Image (tube, rainbow, N blue to C red; front, side):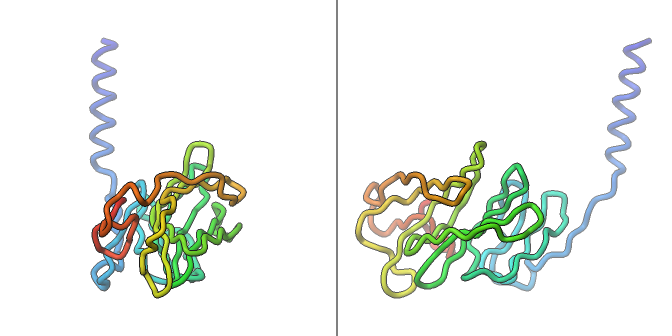
Length: 182
């Protein structure tokens, strides 16, 4: 009898879940040549200002006002904090926002342009990016570290993976649609 009740409860749960409404979201994708990007269920459009981010359940997060450059990537921490990597033709940085969408700090990265971000369990932020010189998006030829780790206070704590480990022509972390290391 107990098994029958458990089976009935399980089937009832599945039937109810199957009838839950599907959330429909109308996006900017159809009107844009910029493809959407994804981060752990979040969807956003790098290169579109103001930056709009949709949560995994389809709701729009607070609109992020235009940063100092063009948004390149996002990362969302388990505590709701948001990191947005941005780039201009000559400099880059990462804006850190709290869970309400208020800007907490900006990490200036200079010629290093972060293109991919991810939070670790200890709330440190990791980035993968490329270093530029001179004119816009001209890759640096000197060796530099393409992976960088930032502490929760915004200070860079370490850097890894020398650019020289990869052949010329295969640039690290480009979000401009060309082939690269990601």
